[in-house]
Image (cartoon, rainbow, N blue to C red; front, side, top):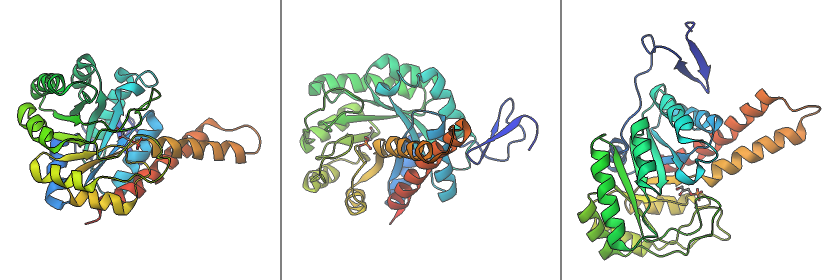
Length: 303
Ligand code: 13P
């Protein structure tokens, strides 16, 4: 390895120059990955990250499986991992990976945050207007679609309300997406991906959710837009497969990765005789996320 390169999570990272990098530039628009998933009738995994170890673990799993992924971070996580710091790290990880990766802002809540992510180089943004009246959600998403078009970036929006909460606030009540509204919403906004609410929720489910496959099927039959399933943690492989056959092309996984990182770190500290070592701890965090992402990639790739 030449002097200006360091190794991290099994991929080469050039600090000053990409001149000699043997990997192709792998930062791609999310649209490209959704189109490829549609062709293969699979879903692309969108894995939430909150620190460098999570990025390394997710990219390692994707490279090993030779499968494109989406790296994403939600606006509510930014107090822990500021966008101007973690954003460039996510982009550098994508650019230096041996597989194609889209970098996505998950649940953007303010247009300013969306604009900042696009300026940093995110290739995809979600604006979450699910708490707004339909007309306001449409108007705001239209603006975001306009803004994103200047960057050739992909836009995801949400209709209906996914339960739970992406973050620590009050849980949202589930409100299933109305298929007629979905047609109107997609026509009016020209959005690239639509997050649906079909009984899914963010966080750990207290019991296995009863997903409304009937509603998903109606939406899938009504709109051509690729569908997104949020609240992936705790959903069974069979349920994922059924969602994929009904047009879901992007599946979000967050809590399972955060939990895996925390439990691998705890097990390391509990079992370590003497003082925990920072570098060993960091490797355990990478490993926890890697194992979780690997497991989900295998499910999402099944045809
Ligand atoms: P989980 O935290 O339930 O995996 O949901 C992830 C998600 O939908 C992120 O937007």
